[in-house]
Length: 267
Image (cartoon, rainbow, N blue to C red; front, side, top):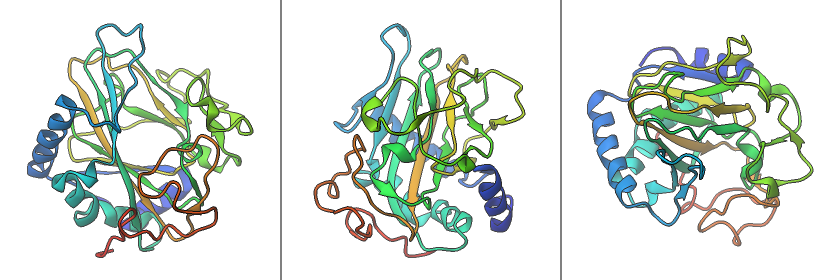
């Protein structure tokens, strides 16, 4: 794996996003892809098909919490180098697993991922929630690479997405880049060409989105989210349902349910 943890942390804090190369080796990626393809063939009830109705030939699936059923994904989330990266960008803090989220965008899918921040969707207060987006396939801008608005995590209040999950909160502002194209040379927008096993780490408040998959290959990414010690429960309107936690925690509670948010022992 390239790059020291201190370099990743400084870039993460400054830009809200950073990249690490060759974090998972080819054997681990191959095993992960085989596992993911099993889920794609038989999606779980926690999965959502986000393909737009006009996207007749496309397929955009989003799945979550696979670590609870898959030993392969659980081992990556808890036992690999991935959680160490989460700890690194938080300055060495111990972390808990939040959840995994799969993004499968079939070749030729025109459905975009709208500009958004992650935190408004989650039932938490606190900013120590790094996401680690693992490239399971090769990814570039033509193939629906995620695009980030550099340093947008420093803008201040939480923002809402353009046209999805409007119930998340009517009190948060619209994203200031909502009309910006993702196919642009704007220097404030950054994306990464990724090989399988590379990862992108991003802040929960950085604005990001992705365009159509114009390539001839499926785009597969697995994002694993972690919780640092500043995070507490906050059941805001429209926040995602977390099995085993929603309805069991009260606002202000520490996220210390070991069976739901397991502590990564090796960080």
